[in-house]
Length: 583
Image 1: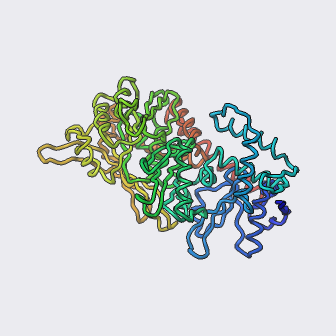
Image 2 (image 1 turned 60 degrees about the vertical axis):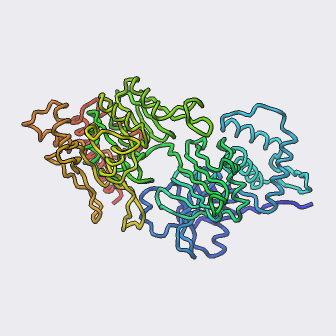
């Protein structure tokens, strides 16, 4: 018989690490696997990681990150530059069994199976988690000695107990070996392209390789089949392609079998953000400017239709969710999506999602298409309709909605206004050319290379006002009112004093005479300053920004501007006094 035991490490050993404090002392004490991992780095004379409580966007400027951060006990992430490849590497630090892992887990499965009475399994994951942990506490209590069916003796110390809890959680409730990446709020996309490592897109540090990999086709196929069963759509050689979503709302695409994917089965996960980025955060990150945001604010307040266009992974949905906070708080909003991704802070929000049944989305099969939902939305008297992504015939219904006075916000795959118009007027959407000016503004967004950070970052490349179609000249007219200058990474508002929408739509709705058009530009500048003060005052959180904008709507733009200016001045004076006291 073999005993499985583990040594303990004194957390004080790590006191010299940058970022070490009482919080990290406690983490090392309650997570022996974490202490052992860091001790191993130090023993091999590898560069010690900086201990970070939480990542921030400012860290994108770090050229060679070497960071260790938590993503929810007992999981930690070590992000560093691989000394061989010189690329970024993502290493999850988890309480995984190592020696005799498969044997121990097989024995534990047998013990669980022999002791579980027939019961209704809760649908809620947190309830299932509680049931699982109660069973583990009952069958594998701390400081006990367990004899397994295969002849092992397991001394259940704290580390082994933690390993069993985590391994069983990942296999029974979580997403197996992908659990750390699903937990990590900074992971945007997860890519497995076949046999080999899993690649990731990190919100701060961009593309990187993970330490998790598949060595054989058989190992990868087995995992992919398990993953497809987890999402309730098992793959097979007859049905090798699956589109589904994880319980947290993340999108997953699976292609099964090396006969159609020659490097082996592959899968891609686009993670669902539980809390969206706010418009103030986008200004802070340089995605857009305060003036550009204020311009969108004016348009959305007066029910203009705006479409956000760009290539895949350009941040269209992120920007769409951020600007919904500019819609007046009293508005009724209906959002329609294939996969729920758009966030809307308003209370009067109807969130509708396409339903697919079987292998084909057909009405006979009980499916509900985006086309059907959009038609139904027209009868729900919304203030705004939001369409997650327009691809096909639902585009025609969206234009019908705009023609009948229902403004539409949407995302669309097109890299320029000309490409957008080509797709709208072509099959399968087939919008008449003379209808195009029902769309008021088009925002073009992309992921661009930032020479300062060396990474790809999202930028609004332009904002364009749609003027319409000239039959005589057979051309579409639009005006670029905002443009991004790549050499300086700045935005130029070209519409100052000449914006068609501000002067011919927004000013009229606000009761501004054509002889006093300067007032609309003065209000634009005031709103831009409001957004800048919100940034300076640290009002960044999506829902804090929303509450502030609701307050602005209630008290008025000018009063809000004065109050925020006073608050900022008070903050500056307080900082000066604090510095003087220290001196």
